[in-house]
Structures are given as C-alpha cells and as structure tokens.
Image (cartoon, rainbow, N blue to C red; front, side, top):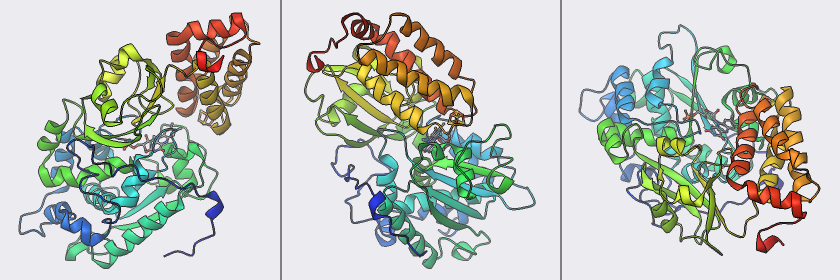
Length: 449
Ligand SMILES: Cc1cc2nc3c(=O)[nH]c(=O)nc-3n(C[C@H](O)[C@H](O)[C@H](O)COP(=O)(O)O)c2cc1C
Ligand code: SF4
C-alpha cells in the first residue's frame, strides 16, 4: 500500500446507509452487512464468477470482447454518473485496435450534493467494482486502469486499496489473470474534494497531476483521454452493475428494470424523510414507493423534490407523486435522474433560501475557466441573496432567468448548466415565494417568518 499522508482533518465520517434491508431486488447492495466486504465473502456471493465466465475459466467457452459489449448493450445499462449515457455504446467507441496504451477510469469522485451511494459500494462491496472494471478492460482491450476516489472520506480509499491487494494476490488482477492472456493493472487515486474533479475531463487533468479543470470537448476521452490516449470513464455504480449482467445475461438485467432503463438503480434519499439512506430498487419504481421505503416525509407534507442531485431541476409534489424513478419518466417531467440523489423537501422549506444554498455551492465550485460560469454563478448567488434578504426588485426575477440563459449551453463543461437549471426551475414552480420575498421583504413559509 502507498505511504499515506495524515489526512484525518479532511475526513468526513460517513454513516452506513445501506444495511436497512429495505431494498427491492438488490444486485449491488445484496446481502451486505458491513463486514462482508472481503474477497472471501464476495466469492461466497458469486463474486468473480462473471470474470471466470468471460475468460472461460468456469469450464465454458468464454466470451469474446464483442459478445461482452453486445450483452451490456442488450442490458440497457445507462451510466450512473449523471448523464445516463448507454454504457455498451460508450464501450463500443473505444478503438480496441489502437496500437498503444489505452486507459480505463472509474469515477468515484461523488461530489454531487445529496449523493452518497458510491462510497457505500466502495466500502462494502469493493470487489464488485474491481470485477466490473476488469470485465470492461477485457471488453475494450485495456491493460491499465485507475479509480479516482473522493478524497474527503479517506477510509473509502483505504478500503479500496485493501480490496485491490486481495484481488492481485488471488490472480484476479495483474498479468495473466487466472492464467489467461488477459492482463489488467488497476490503481486507486484519491482526489481532494473539488466538485469539478467529478467532471470527466477535469478528473483526467487531476489524475495527470494538473489543476482539475475541464477540457474542451471534442476531442472526447475515447480518442484523447488520460495522457492523450484513448480512455473510457464510467461511474462506480456503472462498473459495479456489470458482474450481475454478465452472470445473468443482458436480457435478465433489462427485464428487472424497464425499456431503455435496465436493471436496478441506487437512490440516495435525503432531506426531509424519516429514514434517509441508499435504496436499491428496479428502474421504474414509483416515487411514492421509494418515499415509503425512506420512512415517508418528516416534519410536514411533501412540497418538492430535487430528483437527481442538486444539479437537477426541482419538481413540485403534485408532479412527483405520480412519477416513476427512471431516466425517461423524470426527463419527461422536466428534470433529470442525474446521480440518483433524491432531495425531499417538506412544506417548511423556503424555496428562496433553498435556491440561495444551491447557488452558493455552484459559484463556490466553479473552476473559473469560462466567463459565463465564473461571473454568472456569482451574479446568480448575489441576486438570490438580495431577494432572500428582502432587498430584491421585481425585475430581478427576469434578470435571474436571463443570466441563467446566458450561462446554459455557453460553457466548457456542464457545471454551468447545473448552476443555471435549478434557478429557472425554482422560479417557474415557486414564483409566488420569490414575489412574496420581494413585495413583503419576508418569507411566506411559516417556519421562516
Ligand atoms: C460538474 C460535474 C461533476 C460531475 N461529478 C461526477 C461524479 O462525482 N461522479 C460521476 O460518476 N460522474 C460525475 N460527472 C459526470 C462525468 O463527467 C461523466 O459523465 C461520468 O463519470 C461518466 O460515467 P457514466 O457513463 O458511467 O455515467 C460530473 C459531471 C459534471 C459536469
Ligand atoms: S463551466 Fe464553470 S466549472 Fe466548467 S469549465 Fe467553465 S468555469 Fe469551469
């Protein structure tokens, strides 16, 4: 293991949030209890059977790389990092025959406010990520990979390092995996808590030892990635889903979820609920069921939900009550499934104050490279602050929308969009609260009066 720095003052202690037993058909969190993370336990749960299967080490014929990619395409697995891009399709973009080094990168930066699913995967089922990455490496002809891990919860990084050592010692990683012609070296790398380093090209810059700032795209990482070489990046949960798909088949995975939204999804249900936590449920599960699993609304009645992490537009209760939790249904309702953090707000929440908190976050995390984002996120924050303090003008509402319009789609990376979208959604759905703050110089929500 690499020499560790003393990072204790940066550590945020996470609570285990996935041992409540209230999942539905779990695949990644199945049978976890907090202490059965090791290689021995993972194998007892069927771990590394998928890797054996593709390499023909289970008595079968093995699977060609093309067959692995075809099965992942069939599964309708969509990237769990935010955009929901089809994973099999992404893997098919990798130029397999490229005659030099190619890289595989796992994005475990997990900085989206509200999201806490990946840290539980890395902490309690790390071998699922290692096996998923090794299968991906085989499918794309890649021999070197990195897992970029959120640096503020250092024990997660240490746990992953320990799992890597086990996998190497058992011959599941390294040269000639299980005596085959396939080799894959995998390394862990910890970040230092900058939200922007979760953006895939900023992550690559950071991994190269540079300042974590996004690159212009194109070129995309598939052609110009880590050290300028072809690179595939996927989220932790995306890789962790792969062993189940290979073991059970892409069709079985698809059938667990719904058309175009295969498998299960882990939702971090946070905010005003009685029992917050990570819940793994089939794609397409009704929001009302998810809310029930999380113990229902705490301290009031449901007012609004941010359904996909802080970057996703807020949706009011009457829309959320009828929605199913999958990429297509949430997009149709005007928001995004994003990272799967479901931020529940009850009727004591002031939407102006909530937007103020979000706007503060984005102006703080802007990397400053492009003017619309660097300046615009600060303007948004200051204007919302003004309104919240009762110093706003009615024309500020149009000005807020106009600044958001001038950020969205005009920046190098999607942080700009993430800052702009919540502003527009809050004003669209809760305009009366903003107007009240401006006209009466106080809040209309009883708890905040
Ligand atoms: C500002 C910003 C932050 C992001 N943070 C993360 C993150 O913490 N984890 C993640 O997997 N993807 C994050 N993404 C998305 C990644 O850029 C990328 O799309 C993702 O890792 C691809 O993996 P997937 O195809 O498995 O979803 C972020 C994107 C942006 C614009
Ligand atoms: S949009 Fe914002 S975070 Fe992204 S590159 Fe531009 S300044 Fe940096």
